[in-house]
Image: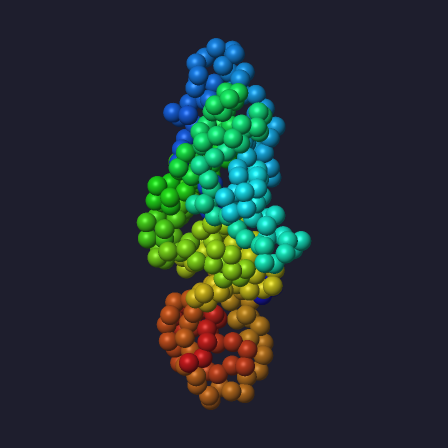
Amino acid sequence: MAAVQLESVAAQHAKDKLNVEIFPQGPLVDGKDTSRVKGSSPDDYERLEKGLMQYGCAHYRRRCRIRAPCCNEVFDCRHCHNESKNSIKTDVIRRHELSRHEVQQQVICSLCGTEQEVGQICISCGVCMGKYFCEVCKLFDDDISKQQYHCHGCGICRIGGRENFFHCSKCGCCYSTVLKNSHACVEGAMHHDCPICFEYLFDSTNGVSVLPCGHTIHENCLKEMEEHCQFVCPLCSKSVCDMSKAWERLDMELARLSDSWDDKMVRILCNDCGAISEVHFNLIAHKCLSCKSYNTRQI
């Protein structure tokens, strides 16, 4: 069982990484390069591009900072604030978080230090503070290789390119187009905590995977489950991958073992297909008569 790997179509579901890194609308300026915001002269371009990719933090490359309304301190972004204010070095009674909805209408230009209302272009030095700019979400990012886009259904900006994702209104999230006609819809699938680490998935900056059953889990948590030989969904107990090869090996193992319980019958429920069967009792495992899965339990 330990050698079982995620594979087949089910594995594709399990490994399809969602673009859930949260970017607290907005395209590039009018969908064009920032060099065309103030005109097309070399001076305009040089001013707009000054300091490009030279400022920011581990979360965003940007040319502005924010002032946190909760503590009136200046940080590169809200994630930097949360990491600092929730650090083990911070007094417990002083720990707090800044949500994306609480970011102020003020930003501070990293080049000239001017504090101003949210806008893409600095009112003082004229630099572009972020090639990707979201006025509603107050997002600035110079690294447009992430292919940021705003999803009105999610209400936030996401990464990976609009053409590569679709919004499922029932699940309440953007999924890869690979899953458009094959994923199992679960209402509010992304609006709950990861069943392993309990981080709220919709706001998580870590990769999220969709299981064949439709439930969602952090990609790293799914890998950790696999390393510990756990291959069922923590929420509904359905298999997270194609286990047919493992069941075949288990068939061969059980065939070599003598069983003195042939006269005892038990009822089992299959976690994968939901079928109820009556089978011979076995100390090791019980096989579903419908789908041949060993992912069963006695009832």
